[in-house]
Length: 275
Image (cartoon, rainbow, N blue to C red; front, side):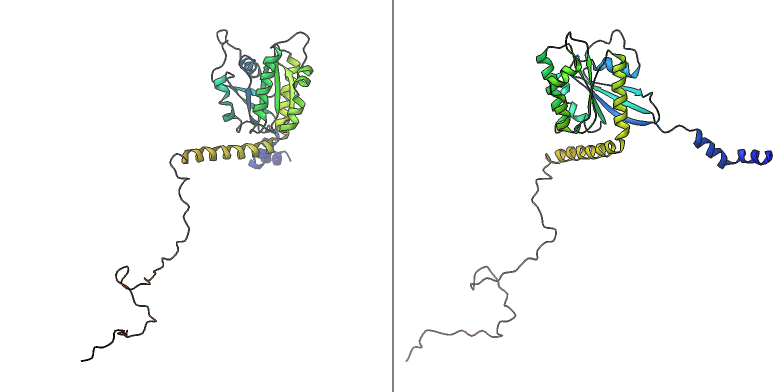
């Protein structure tokens, strides 16, 4: 019996089964976009989520794109979040739309300590990002930075109609604070749960949006060369018709129709002269 067990251990089938039993499930990857106005804490959030210390001389606002990587420490299956931060100044905001199609979710940062007029512009910008774009219907995590005396997160949620915004664009939305560790972890757990539960749907949506984006670029590249402005041509050409001239002597030489008589008689209408 012991010899038989030893032979089974050496068998490739036994090794395969044992490896399958001990192997961990594959790690799912998601593309998450980090947006927000300039100075809203996007870079600080990226370093905290990726657990990479921020350099002391790196305190300027982002004028470009930064990438981070984060692994969820939740129950299996694990997830890896590829975080892409895009600068929040006016020039970079015009480039935000180019990252919508390839993103599974959005993390939107805002400054809770800003004045009400500035916060109103911040959430107006969020509305422009979600309504009628490729981000509509995808999970959105709102992350607040700093504090303001007498202002809570639920005050912001009701004051700026965030629940109505989420319903209008079909997005699941949650708000949390960056400086409160437990609250931030709660928001990240919620985001990972949303991504894992809707992975198939989000992947199909991204494939469709990316293909449409490529087609739109291709269409715009063809317009300057006037390829799309060409006159529509028939697939099958019509046979040319030969029309015989109706008046003798007009249009040069003529062909006699096959139904014409073999001889042509000319009738002299002038009277003959008598001698």
